Image (cartoon, one colour):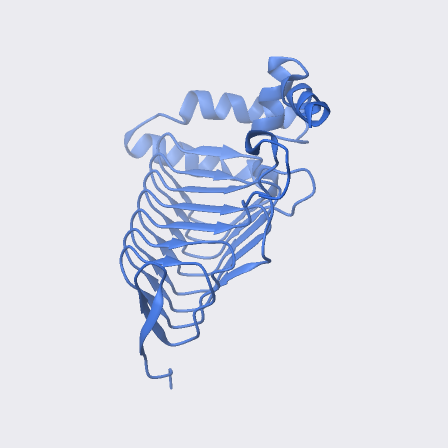
Length: 247
């Protein structure tokens, strides 16, 4: 165990501070694009008012793998590994949010058309993938994380302070201290079906797939699959009612 711990410490601390920063923020982006991104984020990232919104709308799209029309970039947002991020038409990234596609072998993050990401919400990967469907609204102060694959189908609503976790578990049978484990164990891909509503403070843990047209009550913890057309509440979440299927 000591050998594994020593290796992990060396792995985390090796390299120059500049190299570590580049790996965290940009991955394998070319040096020219990294420098250009740093200039844009420094000069315009915190610029307020209509001028700031306009300049970011015009200058930021070239940083991404793909960026649709009329995408709104709020003030003081954090974008990491933008070359692995796809933004559809009409996406809104509100002030202070983070979109981080970090990873060495992942595809990254896709936000479909008219996706809204609220203030201070974090959408980030640890070598996983995230795909958010069209017209999904994610309120303020939420966390969506993936070290595997997280899919949210179109037309869903996510209230504030929701935490959705795909992967991110630790191996409790491994003698290696938790701080030195990768924290990427998973029960498989996590999917939230179309036309769902996650109430304020909901936690959707790894393995807690949710079927279409389901409603999860405020504060519930989903740790196992919820069938389609369900209303589930409690800790852990349990189905208390069934909605009529969509016509």
